[in-house]
Length: 364
Image (tube, rainbow, N blue to C red; front, side):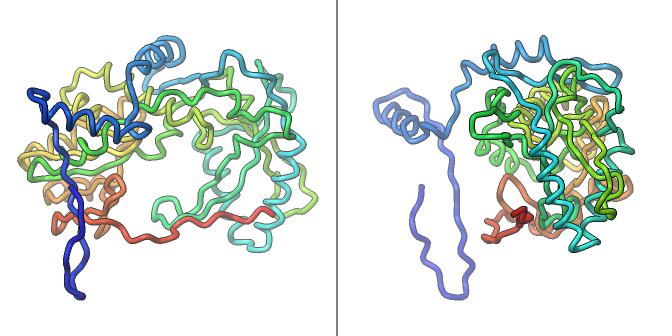
């Protein structure tokens, strides 16, 4: 249902969304169902072909060792030759260093991110005598600046980079996989179903999953040993975890989380599986005690797969108190909920104003 809302000049514009599910027991409801089916062509994904692809990937490409999941890149069966891309990666990395050097603080922060990822085991230095296990490929990278408290600057890897117009990029050789996403409308309705809402997300979700050892040499990249020294030689690195930027990464993340939740015996796991969208969990509970139980059990369930739930927000004071003690509480006045803004204090949902929150770094 849609239409204009008559308001006075001093009123805030608002919108209302209504989802209707009609049982096809007569001509009118059948006609409505057919109309809505036509309206969602190209928007609502068919899922019949998703299950075989997902099950095959989980059976052959995802394994768990201890608390860590290892996932393989889903290569296309008929992909062409993947070039090394060393020359273009070297050229573009050099350009990025020169431009960042104009603002030394930015260059330092960029280099600190790489050092931090090295310390945390997200990447590793490639030994000088290392021989690629299968394929060899280098990826250019550049910074993206975001209006975010947790990630104000992010290194983005260009997995679509081609050495020339006739060559393949890494993304050209990978399957993107089917979209394993829950229905947003249904999630929002369940979020508003009970008195207390809860919102959280997986910390650095892609980096929580290990990349299979045979695929690591196609994720090599370059960075100066001393970025403040113009003549410094480059050090080669490669990813040990799933990198953000590959076309297959969202599928690899979603499928691994699905595998983890399917294998869990906790009743909370099925609720998470239904109320997760990529790396965001949005749900609701009837009582405060149920909220606290979900908070504790969900953190335990996800931690068993090396997934840390952080950024908790809720209109349940008991949960926010516990999350504050655990240092995983997001005290923002407005919280992002599937593209909407939610104010936990008032329990109101609203549309976020249109702003340009992402600025790309100029690499020209």
